Length: 140
Image (cartoon, rainbow, N blue to C red; front, side, top):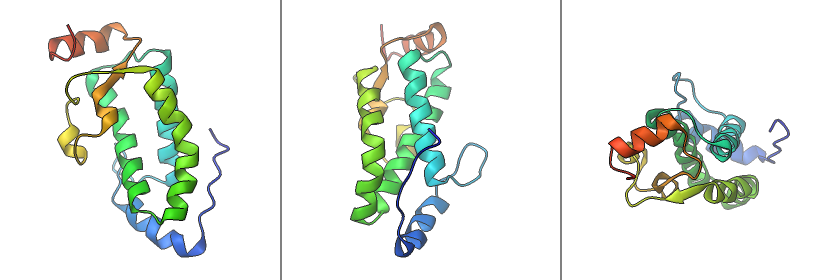
């Protein structure tokens, strides 16, 4: 994951910095583009192996994809394409490791609407997440 290479042109730097300035990690620090992409890659790997934390943790971790989409949407087309080139394989892997549920997960209103990844849960549910999803009516 450390070999992420994105060619950000000099004129794109201020735009990217402006977008990232509004994206905060859980500790209140702003994200970097590399950090967002790495977080998404790591989360997808975690989900693929079976996510063992709570639904709150799952939703918080999933928020990196919401932030990443805001960056993609706000960037010039050339940079969008560059970012998507790296992100798409992990999006595909996420869809392969998850299944759709009928309603978006908690917190979706906080992250700019009903994103498609907020309607997905891991195929391999571990005890704590499965219990949370069941008690909140997402699964039976």
